[in-house]
Image 1 (tube, rainbow, N blue to C red):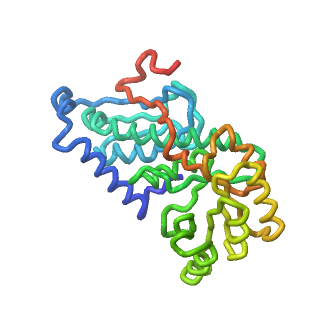
Image 2 (tube, one colour):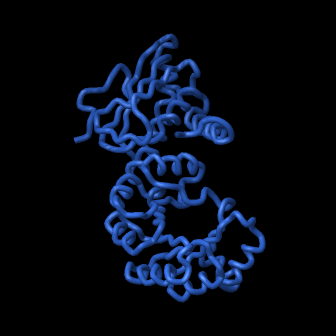
Image 3 (cartoon, rainbow, N blue to C red):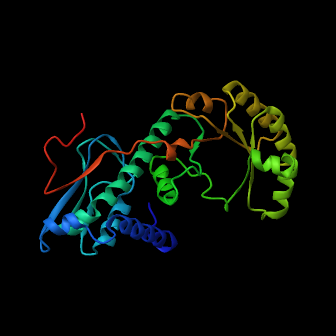
Length: 294
């Protein structure tokens, strides 16, 4: 589940305060002008299309930051498939507070659930195959913790979280270091023995060089399936302990063919940078008639 305590919890609270400040600035003028200060209401949050949920604990935190007296009741769980029309949460308390937090809570819920929904489609496409679907660092600035959590709720897994937690030698590192071997040796001399080194390759010649240099993980980047299958056979014959990752241009229509080449991991940047938000609404007093998408 989502960790809202400790460092991550405080980091998320801080981000929420900043996002609320961006929206409110000097006050919620419409709500303060039209809603009596003592007004109390219950609102329902419901989905308007089928999907996979992610972000309910974050929505709860948004409303709590706006007004700690608001009561948020989740009626579903993150990672759950939901059908259009499902009421996923209720919020009860000061009407002004509910309306002030509404947009930010929904924005985060919609985005995170959109990522989870897209991820689940890719996971479903890989059913029965021994391969792991992972995300990348192609996340929205400031939203990485939330978006990578959403990937997990969709059934995927996380690649590295940043530049600090793994060595990934890409084409520009190779150029700058003077070659694959030079880059691997320089990295190996600096990192602790517990850290792995991954090398991005585009040709079978680069794969051979990465193996000779002692890479722990080899990424096959933008290779056609036939070339990828050849590279997998080459690696398995010479270094069966080395993990193999496929990346670059992976689509829902092609992911199963890529997985069939025998790779261990498939990374898809589009999980977090090219997705459609799930349609989710908040209504005071109950769902409006016709509140589902046809």
